[in-house]
Image 1 (cartoon, rainbow, N blue to C red):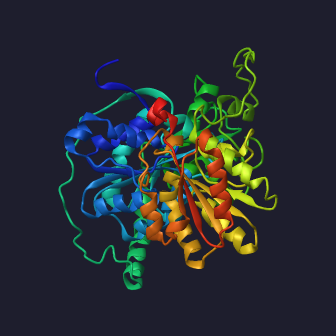
Image 2 (spheres, one colour; image 1 turned 180 degrees about the vertical axis):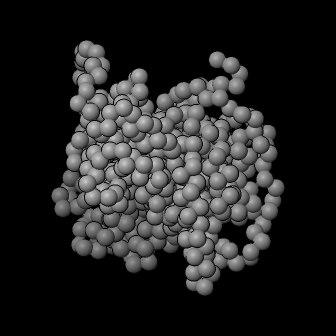
Image 3 (cartoon, one colour; image 1 turned 120 degrees about the vertical axis):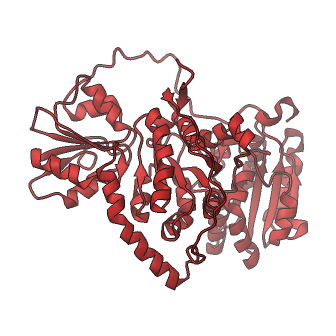
Length: 528
């Protein structure tokens, strides 16, 4: 492999594409399968030499707004997150399409079909369509690199944020990528219009009209994009529309070329002219796309009568989970024959907390106390401690979204549940738990919160946890009474003391917080 061709993950290809596009900063919050994007920049010598900003943010919303601030200053910025993180950043993301951008702003969002490490399978293409901004969907690592670089140019050309959408299989697989020399960073250049980013109604109405006026040009860009193509075929009994990564599965089904006329789409909005051309050739279409039936749903409502659409909505392809060469082959009535089944030599086992994990000792004292309260409930959150839902603990009753432990405990307490206990990690607390606790403090809600402070963002690889070791000060600032902030050490020989403290605090008629302070075993090794 030559010096200019590198074996990169899809995530790494995005990171290098952004650095080679001249970014001055990358912002994000860790979340599989997007985490390696920012981590790649963090350890890259050129990023260190250039002093590219590359620290994690408290959550996806703050990351997006910080990137928007860098764009405001005329510099290029990348912001990274997983699909559910875009929910957290949605307010800033949608409004940034109305303000527009100054320096190039690219959102690298990684979706997780099959929910390998996520609560849902949502498709980020819906967000780009809602915001009316361009979206690029690479089918391989080379395109991930090229599209990221192109996205920054597109962002500055249109004055809009641009989305690059990855999926798990692309983000976490490797392929050779040919890189090009990097460009220089943008100089500082403040907006000429001092009112551009002031979304008072009068300005917002003007900006929104400008956003609408850009749409024909955005559509025209897709129509001429090299990432969208019509590929003719000899068999006119069927047409194929294939998006992003799924193009590889189509090629695997037909290694000598697809016999059906095909529109391949990797840039959005969808190219209407290419689709009309396909409609002129065939009247029966198969839509192959990774994620939701995003394009299939649109096509069902916009194509002329007589065009039959099939795909994920009618069961021709599976409605849930990742696609594969086999599922795509089955949609064509083919069998790829992937070889003999591999013998199962190890029994399937669910994930468990690591040996020596401090959360295990936390759940031991929590479950001992809660067994005396059959009508009480434990509301948990997103993190490796969510494994407390499984045996041998069976300790938690909810896991919905980042920060929901505290707010759900408050709502349950408002409804009369006693005791209502919230279990939340240190990084999740600073991500989105503090505002819910503020609600509870303001109302004096009788809930007890257990913050599992293991000193790191453990589930995504050990990134920095901003509040670790400082929670007493943070909790005092939020208004929790000093006498009801209790620091405990979750170890076996402290078990009885921890049980007694938790019993005392759930008896309190207001807000109380236990900070279970003990480092993650993977951060400190034997010292934990």
